[in-house]
Image (cartoon, rainbow, N blue to C red; front, side):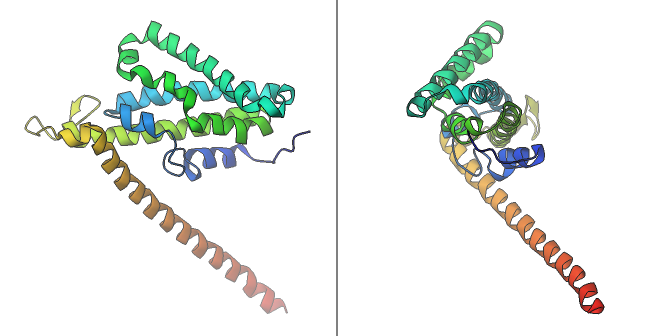
Length: 225
């Protein structure tokens, strides 16, 4: 029987969305990150497609995990993921054809996204269906957030607009560097630096708060003694 950790929904979501974010912490899924994030809208829909695949694959892997032989678990996970990628690909082609043409080859490439296979192997295969769905939502939401953030930075700096609305005015010159893939690397570098600084400050505050709580709890104990 597979041992399961007792994790709360809050712990699962916090880990998947922020602490162990696919992009900002693990640097996985870089192909769609660099290829489609020329705008917030493109990043959003690529993230949604990935989220749908995560939800389906995590759920199915969790439900049938006891029936999959250990020797073929990876091929089995890839087959499950590929099935959901095909469904998403066909659905987008039918109902969102213009966005389908923009995202192009990056939708089928979801099959080889290490983040999805990693969640199937590391989490869904060891936890209940409910926890697997929580994990998929957290990881998928974190992925959407990362794609939209990078897409927003590139769209703003590259064209001076967000979601088609002009921010810097009509006189803003297009900065081609941020629209092209090299701009994605540069933007991602600054975003990662900002997130690392933020995490360091949050960790410092957590330590200071823990030290203050320890000191507050220790003083009454000394007075009682």
